[in-house]
Image (cartoon, rainbow, N blue to C red):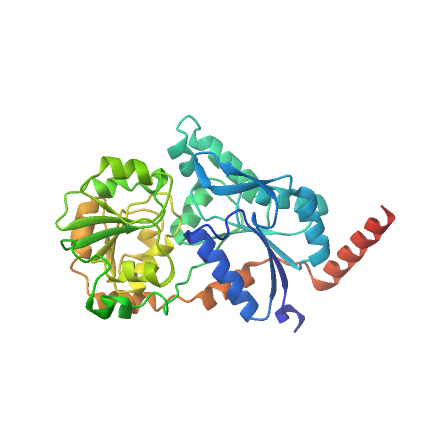
Length: 364
């Protein structure tokens, strides 16, 4: 059937490699799986030669400027059958304007609690302003993909429309219990156990200090880069900061931990939760969107309004139960759900549209 034929999918994102975070991992793995399924995927991202400027308060993130003409050119050259705008940055906004101008259907996704993220960094910007911006952006699309039921309910109450589920996956080959104490040695060698470890971006919206201020046995460790790293190093001399890790080295830092602590209230899912569980390491978190959808009933971690209680409860979890739970998530099913959620035009309409646009371009 024509509806099951491979699609030309245009993915527009302001978050892409070399950034290291859950959004980038989700998008890159989804694109890879879509290609493996036979779809053609083109990604528009800041690394394509656009002029960029660093995001205020977070210079590692680059925002493209003056990209409108180049995005139009890429749209015309690729003639996408489905368009997904993954982020609300400058590239996402430029692509959104083009879609609205040309009356092209498109979908969006909600990866971060952006209003809370901005308010944590710039408290003078109220949450209401952030949600107004996000509603304006996402409600102009045909479908909004979210990772969890609690996020769907949260956004519905905030006035967002056409919300649908898009679950996440985990690389169970990279993140594997076999990585624990490889060669008979831990990556945390010499540190007193138990080892309570935060792994992720070191930034104010991640609420890391709620973890660092806890009275816990053993050692607290922070693994990851970010704009708050140097500040926290100076203030928390009793905490071990190990900086950025990736690939196999990152997987070993998950596997050799006793508990992975996830204190964030601004994430919509928390991919590191599954990555930790896949290595056999249980997770402790607050009762927040993301953790409360993934952890309760999993036997792979604990959520509690008291993060210390959650940490100590997680310490008692069986590592084999964590791995078993993580094995229920795959990137292939994530990509299949993503494709199902796309809103392409019927094929005859798509062909007529791009033919008409080419004719207009020749006349111009």
